Image (cartoon, rainbow, N blue to C red):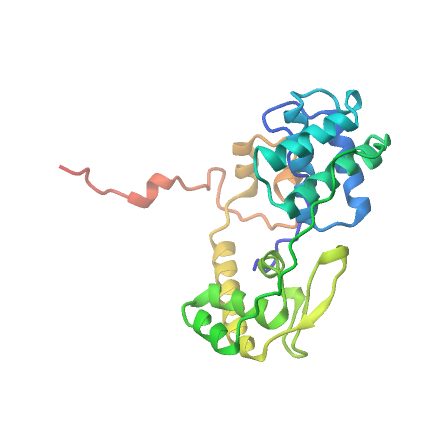
Length: 259
């Protein structure tokens, strides 16, 4: 749980190691309008990429319903993709044509949205939860307790920041939750003291990092930045000389080579 680093939404990759296509730009431009969760956006980009690769990189405008049908059938018959995942792939393809290309597909014949088998959810008893927690220590225990006691998803717990925690009121603000909302949930009382200790350790590490910071202009030169603003955002320059960056070789000092 970083204390100071802001959460940045970086575009997920569509076609790695290839020039960025205009279709990708349009997809990334349209996705945030839907206010989907970050994982949903990543999944849509993934399935759009898979569809393009399946059709040997033909542009989607050259394809129609029968081609989309072949891709979805391939997922079911050849790759044995689960029903819920095929639903997601179908939604991604429909999104591509309707919102990105603005060329909605007609009915895709022969493709029916797979239905998940109806099963009762499995809920652990309090004793079973306690036995699981007994095998966790440190940060892992803290994250598990936040998820169990506050109903957080895994990434929601991992992305928590200091400003999201109200220790006095016992509340947690979940940033960019489902539906791109910021709901407030309960903080388990059992985690308050361990959480305070975790934050004190994080603060100590942060202070040590500041004490070990390097001359920002030296870093700028080594990274080849033309503007120091690229290298430094709200950072104080530490005067350690023109070549203040230490080499990792200094960590071994004057140790004699083995043998």
